[in-house]
Length: 575
Image (cartoon, one colour):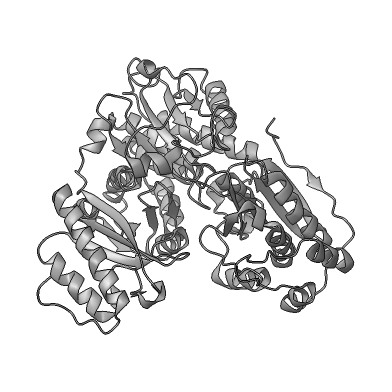
């Protein structure tokens, strides 16, 4: 059973002795090859390693979460390894805004994770456990068999530090972030008030906004759209039960007909987590997932795949000809819808001009970038990683859209957007403006404002397709992706490759980029970037044909090997 609300657990008495006991009972693991304590790093995914290495990390994360929580400013801890296989697990902290932990917090997390003794941990914190009813940490976990015990370690450590616990149980990562955001209403715009800091609130808000958005048109054809269900491949992960529950609420609110039926497939009991299924598999392999249970394809409108913790989503056809709609396609669809509504309103509200833009990474297909720029919609390229694109969308635009190609993304609405909505509500009364205004005002409720959310994006895309009378084929035909190739090469030292601010070019070795530029003069686009975890350099290439993309990637890989083998290797005039 998924709880409707989250019980507040009274904390144990703050105890420095218990903190020390937990740290000593669950030490950091030792590398069997070196005999030294392992080194841990905190990235976009938080701490993510083989599950058997994480007990000591979980204790430290629980300590850190309680340390970062302040009166009336709660934080969250999510135990998950997202799209990785069952042998992995991980943990990340959500800040009071519901977003990912900032750089200062990440730096402290790394210090704590690599403090080998209890004495070193307490020295990093420079404070003892303190008791306060207002110090609250939200906890959630995924369905992995080791997530419950690992989560419990973090909870015990947070309680020993004096924190009260909101235990949400088995939830999606975006739901945990949503609950933290809603528990800190000082950060919320009035459109999202009153706050509902629990999973039921997440379901209710999404369902109400989705059905209200569908209700803004009189042209919907139930016989060809809403009556056909949407298959959702849940990666045999945490999203399965939540898709089922979300569908129940939509059907109840919509009286069984106004909203599309969501059919949850690939349950945790039906197949191995993320194996030959889920958004990562579908997007990378460009083919449908394995359906581990019975699926009736003939009665399906189309299908979607989410990942193991339900923060990524891609869409695909169930026809003979496979059509993939990835994060780039999702961003374009949303931008077209936003631009249409804004154009209607800004004809009347000429005094306010909102800046709509898209943030992409170097991995975005070049065809999507050109299509957006021709609309025209501003495009900014940010460093790879959700925390970088999220920040750029927040800082650069009044309405910032970001989706990585893997389907992780959202739309952020800034202060000027809400001011614009207030102005339009007061001054614009005609029918066309009222409809566009209603649609825009519903979007912050339907779109998770904390992080990318597969369930939120699922309903948003379905509503837009329905309102715009799009099929997957017509959506896909908006532009044609350039053929691309991704590969990697092993190098002695990946740190030799230094990238520019948005990872579109390498600044060292300088001669390597010069040679890559020579290759690109013959057609296509490519870039290389070092892995964050292993001594490999990743390569991306795209061109007008698959053969050209493959050739460009191969030549780029050869150049990386040659330049990393000899840092003095000069740029070649013949490549």
